Amino acid sequence: MWCVRWNAEVAPEYPKTAEGRAAPLRRIDIHAPMPPDLEFKSRLTYSPTFVLIVDGREVSRLEGYPGEDFFWGLLQRMLDEAGIEFRGEG
Image (tube, rainbow, N blue to C red; front, side, top):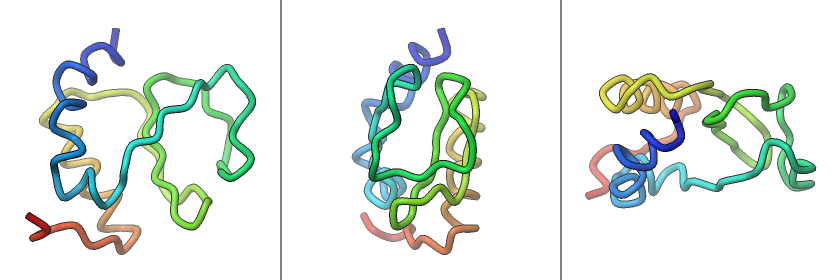
């Protein structure tokens, strides 16, 4: 249900935003073997889970989808804390 809501509320605009360009979305199946090029701090349990990866390693994670208004603020915090520039990119 939460993935469906995120797909409807955020997914269409996500790649068009500065945040989406700074942290492109890569979807993986949490029930399949994890991609060998990604290192997670712990097992992925919930869907959706948004993991910010830098140089192949997890630096931040948001488990669940809190709704569109909260999602953008939490994503911005994740990017800020990781030192990833994204504002003013058009």
